[in-house]
Length: 458
Image (cartoon, rainbow, N blue to C red):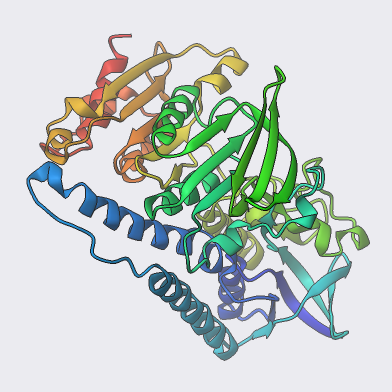
């Protein structure tokens, strides 16, 4: 048995906590069965966004005619750039591994492992590692439901597999309509794949503000076959391909056929595969590890962070949690996490950028609010870029005009969003953002300023 000051179970964002602890002189074990960097670097946001940039580049060439430029696409080296993206990230993960092995006070354990008690993990080779302090950062995996008839008998894809396909399928059926489905549907559709999205809710990206979700769904219908309000009842194989059967609440039945099937129904925490049943660490009904505001679990000297914890499943929230955990575990800071202004984005074209609450959430709280709105087409830069759609929607307190939420559908929404994020975090009013910050003309960010200014008139 090896005894450590700290055991970090999971080498995604958890690897930064391990390195910080080792640098502070704590004898630290980092346990990770796969490549360092976790989902984001190896299977998630890094490769998917790099691939989406290839789609954006292709679509920019196709749109050049709008600017009086004749351009044609002679050839697309799809397999070549997919390999290049994944090889580049594999090299980055390998570099991280090498660095970890050289760090003083840090022991890298690259094996499958499970808890055997609250503070001890055992590897598949039979070694045990006990930590006076433990950080659980074991991540998540694609959700594949057991309840869909025939799915287990089909050779389906998850997002892990889809980002490594070296030939775009002719026809792709996607189960789900959330951000993973939207992004990968956009990517493959850009390279000629006929994409069909089957989503049981009434819109795609159904967790977004209703107006944003509805507008995005209509945009998606222009490039994909979109079946909303349909729950998948079964999957089968025929001579023509993989057949997905789905049914709406009013009994409408559809069959959608594709050459490949992508299951993009969200992600689930890995709490069921790391031996938590051998511990007293408590989980929520949804399967996440419960934490307090300092990211501590119910077990003394055990913390949880990242996708496995009951906070948010974003890389940027994981990075933030890593800072909190480092301060608390390594430095005894008792620092509390604040997720009140946690932004997120969907990287399709147009993008979606969000911070704060939706109208539905405010309605559920019974909180009054006013809406400020501005269209991208009302800005000079939008005309320069030849953008024909997109809007910013600001939700604010009717009296103080404190910004309660901001929802953007449009070009570079993920960047524009951060104009508002500090205002939400520090309780600033829409008036302050609109009137006290001079915006460079004709920057696209003026659409955010205009939406904030519109709050005063409502």
